[in-house]
Image (cartoon, rainbow, N blue to C red; front, side, top):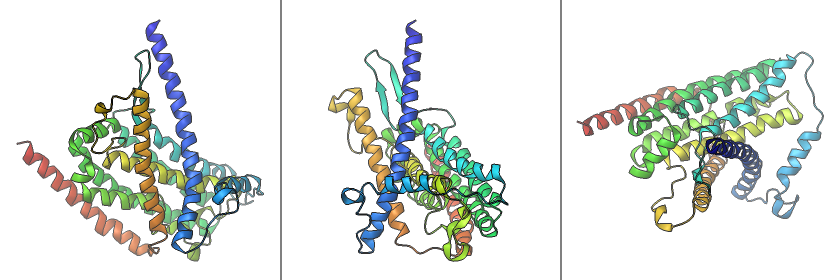
Length: 350
């Protein structure tokens, strides 16, 4: 009976965590659009959104309401099922990735039950992230093909080839981290960094490669070739309207949020508080979980700001430049970084 009670508390905790993560992802995505417009306005000496609520903080709600009530148009010549599946797949893959990220230090309840602040602490955690990210390519490809629009199809092909190309150097950069930590579990990667220091200290080149690839995976400037308005009108979601378009746009911002969380977890220690021995604080497990979550969100917010900063600083690449950077620069650098890491580990373990 006692074990059953523990299992029920564990299931309840996981259910609450799932709902909280989904809600947090939507909230962050919503207000990242607001932050992007404010950052753009600051860099261009403008005010940005300032009408809907104080300082324009209700602008994301106004934009969401507009998308909900706009007329929904489905092209007559499109494949209806795939046309609906595309944005749904993009949104689902963006959200599911969050399931393996440790969001805070484990929470201990009064009855002794320890609830990890992670939906699924599986042995192949980081591989699950890559598997789901790979499926996300289909959301773009299906949407562009099902629209029966040549510009949409061309943009979808661009987007898919770009994402597939940059997954390779991203995976190679990650192998160097896995060689150091010796585990694919996200919680184990965080635990290793808490004991030995953040991975960015030992893998600065790998971090830069991973970050550049994350920009490309999220279709962010200077890699937003799938949405190059001057060449492709509106890109792979040109024929979409109402909330179907909203799902595609939301998926991009959720991907930014999750990519920032993954980078913070792998290279910046996750929820680890730098230069602090948390045990010396003497705080309850609840407050330690709360504080560690705030630390992780601060790291994620930093990465999100860099995403926005880059968009309004660097011009868009040409497509041949994008492919040359991925295959001729990042892949060789990632291979060299992986080999050097393996050689150093082998030498130290002699």
